[in-house]
Each structure stands twice: as C-alpha cells, then as structure tokens.
Amino acid sequence: MHEMEDLDIQFAEQSIKAGDVDGFKFFRSKIDVPVMANETVHSPEEAIKVIKKKAADYINIKLMKAGGF
Image: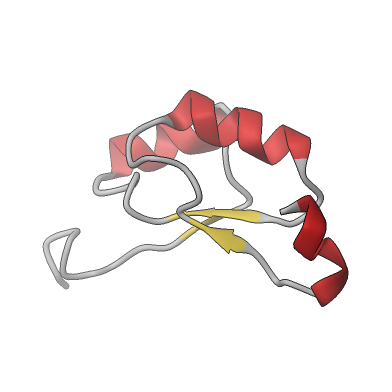
C-alpha cells in the first residue's frame, strides 16, 4: 500500500482475511489510505466490533448478505 499511496487511492477494501478484526486494526495503523471492511461484517454485532476496535474507516454493507431489506 505504501507504494500506491501517491496514486490517490480512495480506500483499500477487504485487505485482510475475513474476520481478522485485529489484523484490520494493525493494517489500518500502518497506512494512510482509508480501510474498508467488507467480508468481515455480516451482522450488526460484527459491525459494532469493527467500530469499537477502530479497525476500519468504512464498512461495506451488502444487503443480501445481511438478510435483505
């Protein structure tokens, strides 16, 4: 990511193995590009865990994976 920071990247999506919230937090602390959790969040509880640990800057919520409307 450091080599790509000058390319004006908006965010890094799902850059760590799904479910590894601590890995997300570590990765986020090492780069300046915002990090988006995607496959890691399938429920409100998982979203809260990511938020409380400040492990990502964004969360991509896929409605179909979250049970739809």
